[in-house]
Image (tube, rainbow, N blue to C red):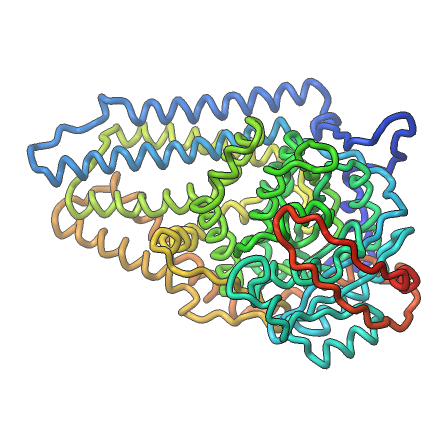
Length: 613
């Protein structure tokens, strides 16, 4: 295990990936400037990357056109069911391959568009609040204390207050706030802030934040926030706030990374995030629309007021970002933009059990499906063409995984049980072309690993754990899609943290075991009915292994001792100077009841806050 000092140095280095902080221009209004991540590669290597990307897309398109060629369709007798089933199989194969092609284009295009912002010195006049939350019983008080103590080490020359948003209004939490010198806020018992739906929905993260914004947000220009299990670095504000010199920047986000990489789940979950945080979010800078990520961000409160607050969604960050990207800044008339910085400004804890990981993935995928089946298309039409393209590409991951898994299982069952083929191709040629297309995708993926933004990814790692984790999660994404189609109610579930982590049981893998039963039954049926052969049994056999793999990994790992990696608090420089501890006076709320497009009414200023920090 690496020493804490060595790990701290590595984390600090990753907190400055975008380069040194510069001074804003004195001769013109400031606008965020960017530099391509390929700039340091040189023109020759960039040309090589471009060639690989073009080849990758061309190979995938060629494979799809070959697979769907009319000559590969089998002759079907007059049986109505057989004809309908054959058409369904062909259509489903076309859909799966089309979604796969979109994913290929998404990663390939992002690979050549990725760019980083050039950091600038923040405006010392910004009034800043740091926010995090606690749900007593789900998040340990001591874990949140660590986050708050780290927040008080954040450097900012202007007004800076730390707030804890307490869903339980617990006496122990209030006492901790007094001890650490931070402000305490709770909406518990306030009916207006605990509604069954909408901006102030009870028992939700967005409802909690919106209540604070409504009551206290007018006192500040920007809020910084982290999830309670994420420990901010002392340079959090320095690396995030400078971009708000550009009046059209609505929010700034940084990468999410997990420090507790002490088992397969957390290591794989950390690696799984690589394409999004290291490549896709950086490419979004080209269009000014990086996605809002709730784990660590900085938000302009006036921009949030334009849309009424954080959106009512189980993935409130994505929904809120989309809403902002479709609106204009009333002060300039230009569209709101966002900025993604690759600088690691907070270190967190990832899900450490399969139960918590599946819960997280179910919420993220279900939230995406809810947005796609709800307001997405209405808002989509308000985007510029470049923004439309980016949103189309980034929202296909969960649908492609879910649809591919479901249709693959259905198609396998139709053939194994009824002999419906859909497409007939030489298996050796299909396998060769499929492997070639997959290898090209892996080539692009692995080549991009040099742009990794996580200090916890092993040096030289190809990211195979992350790729495997996406495949192992396919049954979860399929369940989320099914629940969305059937309109089953979705609810916000807090991912338990630290000692509150949920234990794994056999029931944790119930969705995977249900798919295992279906696939095993189809394989047995094919043998009984005489449809079995090695070519067509290959996919369902692989899918069966995928369905059983998480349970097998858990059984192999559950008796192993953890490797004892450092906690986030040990890795962010806990020796940084802390703000003087002073008594925090009660600050009365002045509710304004947020509404979309509202102009906040003048309310009393609170000069005493300026003396608190």
